Image (tube, rainbow, N blue to C red; front, side, top):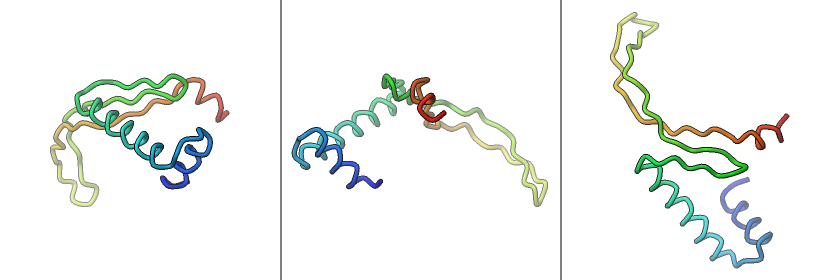
Length: 90
């Protein structure tokens, strides 16, 4: 299901106009992004938790040249599904 299909289905199920649904989804994603950039964790009950985690600096070895390289620390987005969502896939 792509973005257009998802938006159309959501608009149909909620009975709201497509434009309003598109704006709502856009606003939701903008706000979620802003919160994550600020370092906040987002918990959506029944769905899961989004958070930004810091990966530590590490040493990597190239398998071809056996050369050791320093990989700098970086921020990564993490998602952990809720227990109720996990249960639906069992």
